[in-house]
Amino acid sequence: MVPHLITALNGPINELEQRVLESMPAIERWFRLEWMEHTPPFYTSVDLRNAGFKLAPVDTNLFPGGFNNLTPEMLPLAVQAAMAAIEKICPEAKNLLLIPEGHTRNTFYLSNVQRLMRIFHQAGLNVRLGTLDGDVKTPTRIALPDGGELTLEPLVRTRGRLGLKDFDPCTILLNNDLSAGIPKVLEGLHEQYLLPPLHAGWPVRRKSRHFRSYEEVAKKFAKLLGMDPWLINPMAAHCGQVDFDTSVGLDCVRGHAEALLTKVRRKYKEYGINEKPFVIVKADNGTYGMGIMTVRDVKDLDDVGRRTRSKMSVVKDGQPVDEVIIQEGVPTYERMNDAVAEPVVYMIDRYVVGGFYRVHAERGIDENLNAPGSSFVPLAFAESHHLPRLGEKPGVSAPNRFYMYGVIGRLAMLAASYELEATDPNAETYE
Image 1 (cartoon, one colour):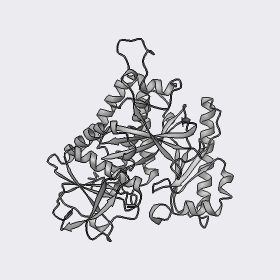
Image 2: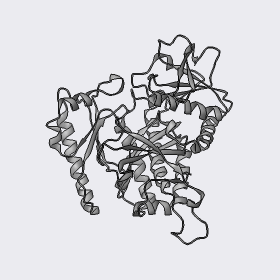
Image 3: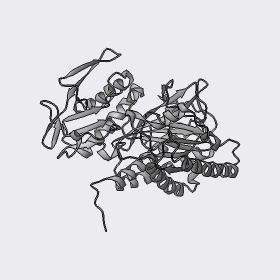
């Protein structure tokens, strides 16, 4: 189920949200049946955009940072979900090895690592940090802003097992999206669980594949509720062999952008939506909000400036962009103190454990908010008087506004599990 939170959105409930809230029993049963067939990713965060008339995921992260942005009140839920996840994989687990990203100077990221360690420690595990950085030869302490510290230790590979000196873990948790490539030390492990699996990293993963899986999930879900899947699904297209520096492949991008803008216009007309459509062009792999541009008119692609070209040419860890996804833009009508905001939902195993708003005062409703200058506002748990009061007439007590976000977040997580099954190199194939 989904925790009940106070959210910044407090306008009248729109038709889409009303339908979802009324269908809660059917929705929960549907998810239960899906999870009998599919394994959820170990942990997931999903960026959502709420346009009022449409609510859709725009990014799904399988190596989520940002756990430090969840409120302390959310921790018990995260601990319970972590227990359930570990119990399923390795019930007798005692030791957990956590492998973080390499940017040891980013204090926000390190606070996320600290929070993750706390969650798994409270779930009953000994947690230690191993680094992929070959320059770390001895245990290295890193001070944190709150006065705490982390100890990074060099990895020790012994035949088919990976651990640290005097530390042999049952489970290895990656909080590193492998943007720089798959390190040899992580390959060919035996009798240890590597979570998420290597094929969840960006060397293999593609956003276009994820959103094809999401489209499949959205159609099934929309059929259950008797509604148009477009209301929860951002339309998308894909272009390979693109180079913004030399303009190679930009014809493909222009063609798909124009076709998508036309489709969105048609949908807006059908629903009487008085908005100017836009599309988002972004790197098909990679994260951190890099390699993203908003296109409101195809002419925008004819005069791409040098700065935009270089921004669109490489992503995290200097990886070149040669494939892009062109995605229907979903405007956001969420606000925090007059600044544009979007909800981010966090899940461990199949459970929603909390979320926050990403807020950016310098950005518009049709722009990427995952950019320098953004801030994070925790979603607060609702007070008891905000919970539905049983036996009262409809409308007397507040509905769970966060439930809708949790549903869409879980749909994106389910799509990720479809996607991981399709790309699993060890999956059995049936002729």
